[in-house]
Length: 422
Image (cartoon, rainbow, N blue to C red):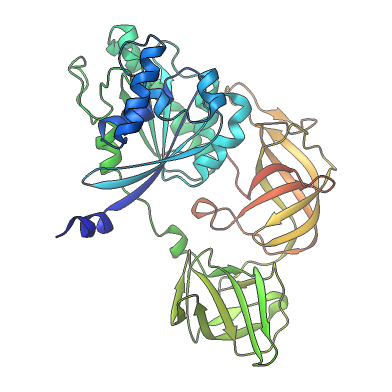
């Protein structure tokens, strides 16, 4: 088997890293890239020079990932950046997310596309508010596997007692929010212990390294394929000369075959006669495919309408959801908004903010005045037009939406239909 064939057949795992400030996340990601030999020679030489100029003893591996000038100058991660590396067993797409609380919205973006989330804590500080926040976000977005790297274990004298205490607290939190596949690994990203290579300093730990776990964890695929067919119409293609009418969009969930019956707005149905793609006509389409559907009946459909399978959702004018505040402008009860669901954009109103989850686990804020930046809140939303929403599933294949400021167009919150945590 050739090298190109091996690359083509390797599974790809999407993961996300998150942690609080100064937990060593950038160093951990840099260590993964460096020790899997995923760094170009000229990049490595540049890091060596910069590390020496700063008086760093050895390589400052965080320089491999803090790519923005502001990040390099401040020594923090600001933006979400994607890194790519590979081993003989798998290829990896890593979303490197910020640790500062004001950038939690960026972390939500990184987690939303990930199959595994790697959280970091400093062994000297243990589980902190950001750990709870990031774990809660992972649970909300349906991530099944979360790995906690207890970093800087060397700074607590490689203590098993310290590690076990952090492990117990984290596993209890994971169980409370519904993460059923939690792993905890003691590491020193700076020295390389248990990141790619096993540690010689931790004889009491017999589990896998971070890379070994990432290579062996199950890649959750096909959840969107297991749902019923969903295609939100993005564009209607008309060619009057040839009497061509097609409905273009990306298949969000399920699959479809020519000859299948589809359900349309207002209780109408039709039969799929053609499935067109950029490469020509095909017989089937599945989640992730961009296609143009042609139907047997001449039906007036528009952008935002949903073409669905037999288990099609019923349109509603009101629904419950959980939202994450993404704007400095608070989301208040009675606030008029626009709701972006799939390709639909309709006017709506936040009729109530029922409670804001307390990340520290003390007590939720019941009937709060608003939902602020980075808050996670249960809300109720009314819409001005029928909207075929359904419960959040398959990491946003269905059931995800945005709340948008009607005046400015700013995104106020990201939401999950019918999803309640705790």
